[in-house]
Amino acid sequence: MKTMLKGIAASDGLTCGRVFRLVDPQLEIHQRSIQNLDKEIERFHQALVAAASDIETIKTRVNKNLGADRAQVFIAQMAMVRDAELVDPVTALIQEKRINAEAALLTVTHDAEQRLTSLQNNPYLQQRLATYRAVTKRVTAKLLGVDLPDLALVTDPVVVVAHDLVASETIAVNPQQVLGFITDTGGRTSHSSILARSLNLPAVVGTQVATQQLGNGDMVIVNGSQGNVVVAPDDEEVATAKQEMAERQQNQDRLASIRHHGTVSKDGVGVTLAANMGTVADLPRVEAGGAEAIGLLRTEFMYLDAHHLPSEDEQFTVYRRILTTMAPRPVVIRTLDVGGDKPLPYRAAQDEANPFMGSRAIRQSLAHQQVFRSQLRALIRASAYGKLRIMFPMITTLDELRQAKAIYADERAKLTTARVAMGKIDVGMMVEVPAAALLADRFAAEVDFMSIGTNDLIGYTLAADRTNQDVAYLYQPYHPAILRLVDRVISAAHAAGIPIAMCGEMAGDPIAVPLLLGMGLDEFSMAPNAILKTRELISQLDAHELTSLAETAVNSASTSQEVVTMVQAAVPDVLG
Image (cartoon, rainbow, N blue to C red; front, side, top):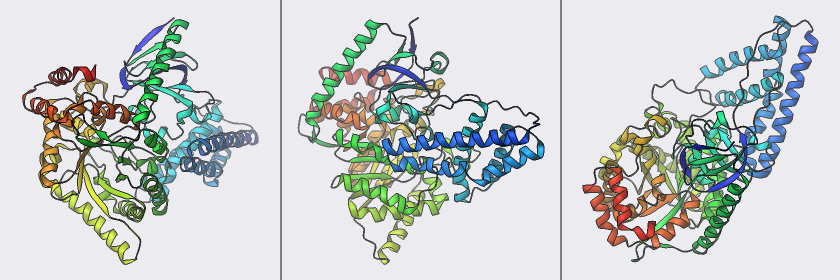
């Protein structure tokens, strides 16, 4: 029987296809006494062989479809599944305690995790922890006769259904095999939503019940524009959806004609439309999207995807490739931003009551300077190959900014002494904490550029966790308080004579764009698939006329809805 699931419209688009549940099964382990020890040890070794076979298959497909960088994690898993450090203790425990293999594996895994978790200051041992967990989970599943869901093993395009998607779980996502996403939790700025937009895939998040009501193979229609999912549609509904999908594709083809154009308003005001990037695999989409720059390269993918601490040379190779591809267009690379919703899988997480306000982003970099300095050296070396801008995340105080700049200057001086080739580098910061926005004039005097990170700025200003369904209604990009902070930062940057960008989701929002253009924002950085639509929108807007709209919204509006109404009334023909 046909049903409808309602959620949050997270990524524009429409698709229909079969469900693939990316939901780990419960692995219930019960200890049993064993009489035939040789047979039980053989069962354990067969599970190891089967797990190794799966990992090898996944590694091969990921390497072919997504590149060697993404496959590194599975190479590490292949080594671990054969490692005597794992195999020998389990075998010994089976013999000593005369217990079943899965119970022995659970005990050994627990002991190893306790040991590795306690060694927070040993990067090598910490990077093994995530690999250890992944391998033991797979071997346990083999022993229990349970299949783990693996996107890398999917052969036909599917709609992925999950409770949520976190960064470390999307390593094997192949855009050619995924039609769209449906999740139980999340909001427009959750990882699931940002991933979907970066891949130009429709997504509905926050349905609360998707994993409970959808099974593998169920046919669904996902409307990422309206935030609904039709379950078990009839033939007529499928035909209608496919017709609309064809029309959307025609519109995309039409927009492709302005791919290589600059971005200029109707009255001749030029701005830069840049792309947000989360991985090297995004480069083709950045090019296809018509980006004039990369306004935000998130470097976390090298740390999360590889499941190990990347070396300076590994980082340098990646940065050089991106800068070379984009040259002479500028590339803004954000230093490591982990913590909060992005813990490193191989570093033991700190027990923090509120990690979003704890040790994250620049705070982690300053606390773990060895990692920070390695990244800065790789960036400085790569600057010889393109137009690099380095950006520090989550700056809250001038002391933090000055300390980060001093470390950068120290590493640059060392490389200069060593006669290492390098280019001119602009150094800037993200404004994503209210304190930084309120003191934007002081910060602007000490950086070459600033970029407003609205995803966190909204959350911190309105005290609303963007991933919490219970307070999702408070996460309001058009809230007058947010507009006042954004306007304040733009004005401070212009007064200091430095460029000001925005790299949050708000930069590609069709309601926000007229306001930001009126405020004088210089650069809009967004998901690659939003660039052409935004370029067309800006070409139909009069920037000077929008100045008064922005002033009214900032100074007179009291609610988000008032702001939306103002924008829709000011440019009705453009927004439809």
